[in-house]
Length: 169
Image 1: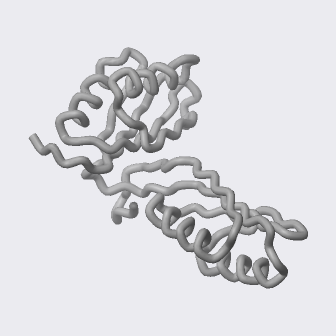
Image 2: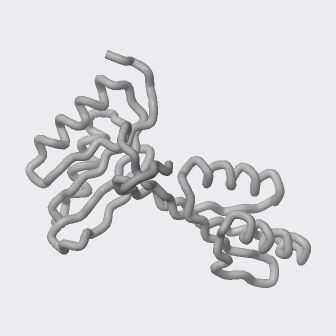
């Protein structure tokens, strides 16, 4: 088995019931598996939710995670996204505080360059919304940290779906 630690993604179809999220996150914490990201939302069927989970593990641990998820009564289907072509995006908000008028002008240009939306702004702050891959969002954070003194970041976690033709991560 490969002992190399790497990012891995799982998508789950689960019953949309109280406590399912707690059970799944409890599985990870109980076995000391780390959740890098977990998102969940209802599907087109209101009785089913879909989760996207990112973890960092070796192959043996990852196989164990998938087996344990498949054994859970509330889990309808487990899809391994690690080697599958998927479209995966992450929602991120960045609030830049203590802005000068020049900073705000620069932030509006940055928003245009990175296809971000300016969601709100005030006398000395700007709130930007980014929807990109987690990797690109991380690069944006690093860039904005280097350019501005005070930023606040909220990331929503990645959601993904199997690609029709082209992979995008």
